[in-house]
Length: 354
Image (cartoon, rainbow, N blue to C red; front, side):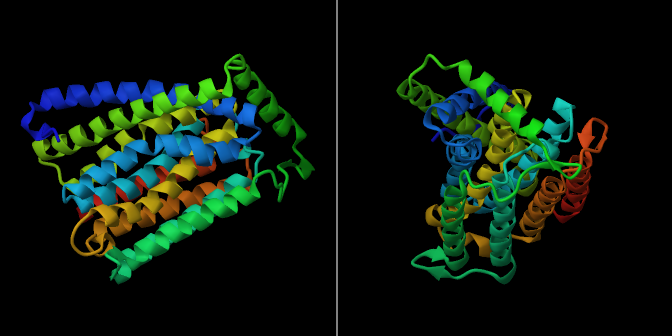
């Protein structure tokens, strides 16, 4: 394993920047392939976002957490996971600002995203409970980690069985918003035509190749980010929650903004919420790789508050999706503005907790 702490900080920053650019462009490309796969297989946007796109864009988080846990930096791994959860919801708010049309949460016709959001809150709450009360090992892995992975599996099962079922219909002023559904269908059709000539096998191979690129670049982001943390004198908690969280969330940022600009709002939001479900499931992986007592027993107040911040910003976005208001401020929905304010206030608190 390369020791990046032995490199000059400017070299590490250069590697970090190049890896970030590679991840950005690979993420944008994989979004288009994911939509084409959705069109060819008949699998809905929400399911593709959860099962395929979220899995690929989670690779940097997986690389960062496994590497950190294997090298004895379990606290950094946990901070990265829950830092990524909060940051990725913030990404939705930034995307809302970037597209600047109507509030993002009022542009989603698929009820499955609400279910994903609720499951996010449940799984993060389970992990937070383990942080607060402490954990004990069962077969070498923490009991709360076992509960987390079981809850993740149950979530995937529930979401897979909910695919295509319309528990509610998007409405506007008391009437079904048929225009929104038609716009979504038209956006999916336009996006799928870009790669309509490619076979499903070709799309899957190209997607796998981009997944490998994202994994390697994500590994470099995590290792150089960790090295820069040591070289700049910043604590692992701060870097894990802010710098590494933003760095390993670059694939989600790229895929989400690409999808939103193409009008694929369900795919965009499902990618973020699906990734966050995977992040909680990765607590089990950290416990499996790390040595010593269960990792949820090793965390401090900093990480616990970070997990609570993830619950808060996710809940704000769920409220926005349920309310479906189209009022905006500074070109973003009121819920997105609330998410940014909540996250900023949370970072202030965490600065004093570090």
